[in-house]
Length: 134
Image (cartoon, rainbow, N blue to C red; front, side, top):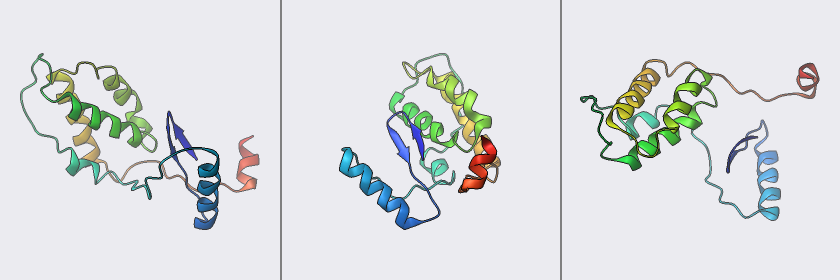
């Protein structure tokens, strides 16, 4: 289970166990199940295509789009810790983003496009591997 503020990602080697866990959560808490998570970066890139343009120190014309892209990139950092610092930095410019910030966020998207086969793989843990970590 991965928890980020008010979002939870539940994964496991047994679909039945995952569904049982989600049912137990829903009986204790009010939440919305958004279904299967697509962990690939590819759907993110067409949704927010990087468009090349001049970097100006003016307010970005679409702050909602900036927030959506940076918010989506926060989830990418779960398996791409190499981006965590940069994404965190751009989260600090949510209010109000400038054109130069958007240009730099597009650089991250272009980097993701060229390195989309990289990232950490999250594998199920066994009791043995859990004890090895302790």
